[in-house]
Length: 309
Image (cartoon, rainbow, N blue to C red; front, side, top):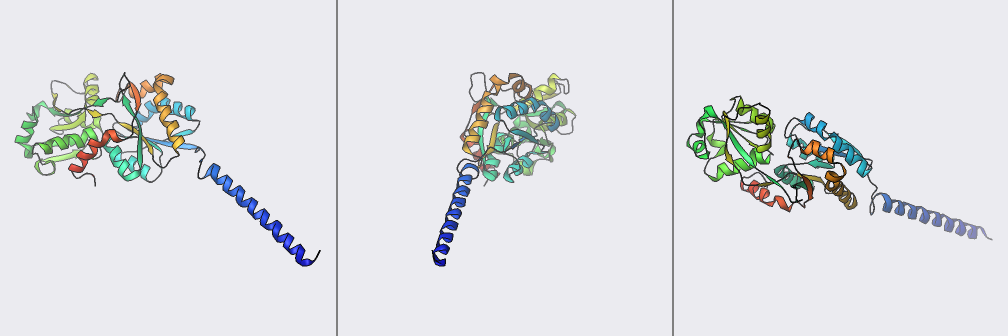
């Protein structure tokens, strides 16, 4: 065989090796990087800090263990100190799963590609609702929205967080709808940082009235932290769809479905873990599948108030 023939054979063999390597690489990508991504080793989960975040995380611990066992993936908790931190963590791909409020979810869907998968349900596995309330201290003299409208310049108001649904968006929207210009008319507005903090601020007469939802108010009354003869509900909203759990929208679809199913199964497979967390916060009886469309009216309220592009 001539030298040229040997060279052709060598080149042919080399080309075959290159093609085989490319095939292996493409095959590896199909299994790992593109068409069927591997399940990540860690999923990071955050809770909206509606109240004391350390207490919330401690009560969620059995649920975290259930999710970890059910999914076969380590679940790490992400500690956030306010609502915006959770939204930004998802936007920056620092978390994969989060409990949001309805408005914070709408913001996260807009800014961080969040996708709602489940929300709190009732005993009939139907999407449950909750209510925003305005509470006022007796010494404020407030009995209704009309009383607020009559003398807002003399009043101090506590909201929870700018991204809170019941602790900001919905009560702000209602006051604006009856002619109260929230940013212009009040003596002072503060953001207390949590629903429990708002309730206690009203109870301690640090503000005249505040926005929250029924849960923290009823717990504070039950625990003797506030006197219901001194702090009363002066307004209650229509029903608001319960808070959703959302995932980052760029996760693998099969993984999203597995996460969703794990939450849906939690009340039956891990009833104690479910009850420990839900019994303290929203008191849901089940989780139900959602798509995000359930929160469209929240989106419209936010747009109307200039809180969403």
